[in-house]
Image: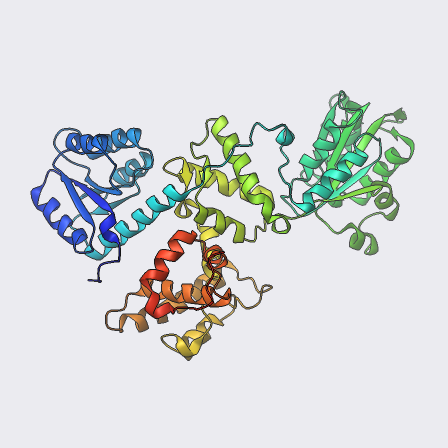
Length: 519
């Protein structure tokens, strides 16, 4: 068993169980690491202890007890303090047990009989989560701000340029081409232009050109006459006619067939359409906004997109930056999303811990704001209280965060060259930002890496694997930032207070670093 962690004596763990032997044996295991131990023989007594004074840092509690059971006790306790970290204990590892435990906000659950190492790992993890909750900043909520009424959040220089162009073109009838990666919010930009335009009292229709089959897109846009094709049992009015004196947004216009592009060109040039199967020319007064995530210039060169239509669309160009180009906006975007979810009653979490936010900021966001929204929703649902912790983030984010913490000094690592060769395997060469592993490559490489690491470190007398990885990552970050603790903490995805604590614990191994600074 490992040596007690420094300063564990400042943490109190409450053990709630009606079995005297369990309270004694579990208290002994946890007490051996320096934790202060308090006990209760029933759920009722445990609730009274939580009500009586300062809440414990962690609670281990049996599910099956006389009187009120552990699940009921958990709900009572969390109604008193929603940030309580509670680990339920059970001898029956059923699906129902696991589901109910997590449903009511348990941090985790432990199986009886206990594995001491598992218990200590759970205790350490839960107490770190409790510390993160206490350190989580209270942020001013901006969800009701007039600045965000369009749903577009961002104060970065890149987004300010977007807002400027919107302001310049909104009041005109000019055609606007919005370009950017998938998920950056191009439709929001188009809607914002419409809302601030002179046509804001008229209709607005968005058409996803990529989602409509090629043989139906013309009917969708221009309408059709009865009997013009099989299934045309009645006349249909198309989107352009429906949007007369309004605005139409053609999303993913780069996916439009060449034949349809020709008819779009006619609308832009002459303001005229013909329904499919009809001979009558119909005049329409429609402003056209278009968007694509494709390189239209390359498509023009390869004859996949009409050059004359490209120039008709590209009167004004708004390039929406990717999320990776405006990471300073992530905290405000997350804040907006969480407040919206809370307002709609979909989640209770309203903010992130420092560690969780640092991980989100480091993540590359290939799916942009749309991907961030999915991850925020996932995390808000999983979170056990008002604050989202790092552990609540989706595995995709956490795995990507892990790959950024690889050590590359083979001379000083267990296993020497073998470990270095594993780290240099395909998909895991973190030295090159352009080398991105597939999920399969990453899983294979990480399996090999940790297999070697586990075997080598396990043979070291008194060395624990997680401690070994942690202290070497801290050493690497401190060295890489020239001793700047604030930057090192950001790289590692932990708070500065957590880093200071770890530096105290690993002082001998990490080194003094005479040039360390705290800011």
